[in-house]
Image (cartoon, rainbow, N blue to C red; front, side, top):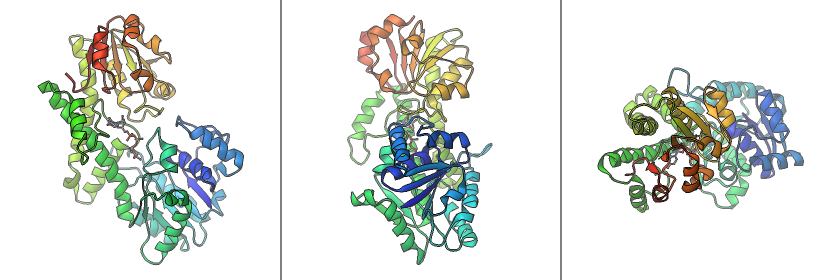
Amino acid sequence: MKISVIGCGYLGAVHAAAMAELGHDVVGVDVDKNKVEQLAAGTAPFFEPGLPEILSRGIASGKLRFTTDMAEVKGAKIHFVAVGTPQRKGSNAADLTYVDAAIESLIPYLSEGDLVAGKSTVPVGTAVRLAARVSTAAPGAMLAWNPEFLREGFAVQDTISPDRLVYGLPQGERAAAAKAALDEVYAVALARETPLVVTDYATAELVKVSANAFLATKISFINAMAEIAETTGADVTQLADAIGLDARIGRRFLNAGVGFGGGCLPKDIRAFTARAEELGRGESVAFLKEVDAINLRRRQKAVDLVVSHFDGNVFNKRVAVLGLAFKPDSDDIRDSPALDVAAQLKGLGAQVIATDPEAIANARRAHPQLEFTDDIEAALAGADAVIVVTEWKAFRELDPVRVAELVNRSYIVDGRNCLDPAAWRAAGWVYQGMGRP
Ligand code: UDX
């Protein structure tokens, strides 16, 4: 099938390459000339396991092209809109400028029977508005909402083998044609009996937003329990294991620590709150403000642990910050708790030296005042404190005996509860976790 993908960021680049991998004929369009040149050369503009391989395979086979010229979408029967919906400046609401611009620039090239499939995360009510615009400006075309649930670090796998598909279809006779087009795109997943939810626009939009709100709530719930554990001497990791054994609760997304970050969960819960308020239903999701507040408190808690270890003064203390990305297997530093903790410690006068397997280049652009090294041992050398803020495998596997030889003082804060406290203490370390005694 001939497909276009408008917007080649984290979502669109992976979607385009994955669709070509599935055998479709794909053109990816983006306004960023540099990004398009990189992608067209088979280079991933960001770190994502498996992406370079499917990009180069797609380009070599001729099934995958990238361009800045919207006219090249002509001939495609389905056009995925995968542009960003960042948090609007000075507000919690989503900025829909890129979505609206993508639709406007696509409209002149739409033909009879074409399907525009929205993938971006949008406030509920956006699809119905865009559908009205498409039907006025390109009456033969139609719109569906087809949210995406990929996780960074697993984006290729999540796109090729999603755990569910959601189609928000237009009302009336066009629904069948829109469904047929999406079924053709996802034929491989459907043949594997991937669960499919066929619904209306509003439900499809809300599935995405509420799934992210639920995940954020789950993380903040366990972080709230970490706060209680801290004042009662309980251990939040054992608590999570125990409550997670209840199948109704489940153990996943119950890892307490410095909390969630990234390009989705923080901005999505804020945009959801803003949208609910616009709809006069602010009280329905007022708890999400608490979810956000708990989350931000945990970053502060990690900083406070270090500061109170040094009796309130970290001036000139050398702190090795292990991690910058918002989570492992990603170079994404958007709203990263790790980078926030590093910057806060630096702001308090500590000599911060940070390391990360993939995110240094991005972190340096955002926070040029910080000192970085790609050598873990160099980061640890002479440290008065070590803080783990992203649970990369390389950090989880550090040998406490070897690290003790490198540092000035054996003091570690495990901001992701990813280390074995007993092993570190046995090697002479003062170990502090988050919500652990
Ligand atoms: C998320 C959703 O999971 C995905 O379905 C959606 O499409 C996009 O947003 P992503 O942002 O890639 O994906 O990361 P995710 O794996 O959800 O982690 C988000 C943040 O939560 C990370 O900072 C992670 O460190 C943190 N987290 C996750 C916790 O603090 N504790 C946990 O138990 C799980």
